[in-house]
Image (tube, rainbow, N blue to C red):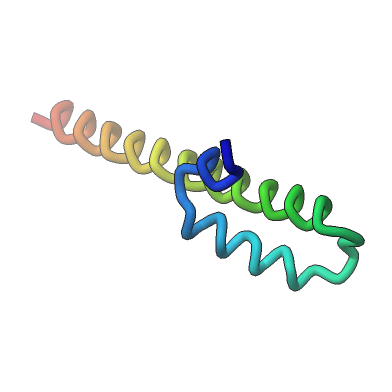
Amino acid sequence: MANSELFEDNELLSKSMVAASKVEFLANSEELFLYAKALYEATLWGRKIDRERAKKIKRDRISALLSVT
């Protein structure tokens, strides 16, 4: 299985690779890939947290509206 098949968002992976390639302290391609993967995973995690937070805010607003009436 190719590395690109392991990732659900190839555009994000590409952006992560570009960002990682700008880092000067990486010594080889393996470190570059690992750093890009860490950026990729951190971004996905952030998106998940944002979605969960948005759902909670929506639930809280609905609860507040229902409790007012």
